Length: 346
Image 1 (cartoon, rainbow, N blue to C red):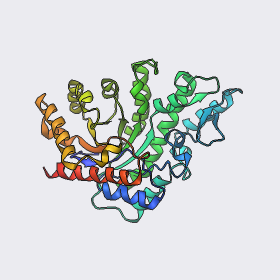
Image 2 (cartoon, rainbow, N blue to C red; image 1 turned 90 degrees about the vertical axis):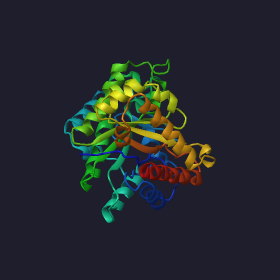
Image 3 (cartoon, rainbow, N blue to C red; image 1 turned 120 degrees about the vertical axis):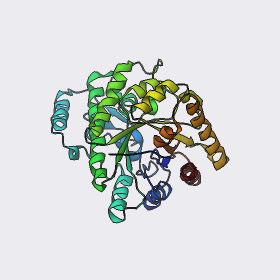
């Protein structure tokens, strides 16, 4: 599908709201061209990023607090694993659906799209947790994380691929380009002692998720809210790299050679220019536009075409807003909308 960024706005996903209607309306109002569904962790622990996508994971154990999940390998796991692969090989995304209990905002978005599709829509966005973040966050009962268990890491990659595919099938019925993000905050540890997996392994895990969506015509993205090895991410098959342009723009732009190659191969940049911390109460629209323009000017100075940068740029908040107050989150979304509008008018 032919899609251009042109400074359209989208978001990472989470909101602090507990009223589903209000949250959904905020997404459609502030993201008139590329709305995404709201993840609502304040409604239920099941909406927490690392629990939301675990339905169907073999040997999963949810602890009494309802907020901690782990993988129980104290008994023989071979039957559970065989059952998982049997289901996976049917290649039926409906067998991996995300239930309303875990993602009420997704269903609200679908209802909203069915009732009144906006004329302004240019694409729709969904999101899953990335396989590296989920595997790095889930512990086996032996004490290691799933990232270091060859069999459970593979299961997680395939589970997340199918959850992404399922969302894609539901969102693709509107005749619009569909973007699915695999969010990878854990990549901030990539290359450190905290995350001892090789570059090739990381890329192949991500590519498996991306390819599941891309083979059906969807676009993929990955958001990392801190600093990471951006060259590694741009060497993967991802379509959109989403970075915190408010706090880490200089760190990301150090990779300008890789950014140039990434844009040349058809990649997009999601500039997370609106801070998702208490700083949002004191920044002005003007500050954010100026900062963004400086980043674009830096790339132009390195020989990238401004026309190409515009076509391949999306505006977002720097991260999700689930931990902010409702007032702060609404300001984040308003500013995201306003930065997009100013950049489009230029």
